[in-house]
Length: 106
Image: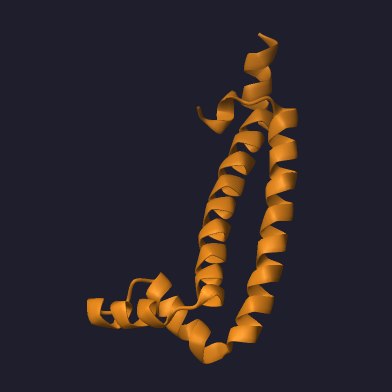
């Protein structure tokens, strides 16, 4: 099911909820990154960006603790939420376009 099949009111509410989720996740990311330190966040970012060799990745995974995994989880959720937000926004804008309104009136 694509987002185009949803009514505009549902899309508007979905966008608001996704915006709130993104803000909350970004707040958590900022706090967690501050507590981990820039060096560790940089290492985790290399892991996230898939730039580590298999050996480096294995070594990093071996040393990851709960907070490290939580930051990676937050990045994953942020990526999904931002993608969903973009898709919902595009679908909502299509509902608002003059061509879409014209076809609904016919």
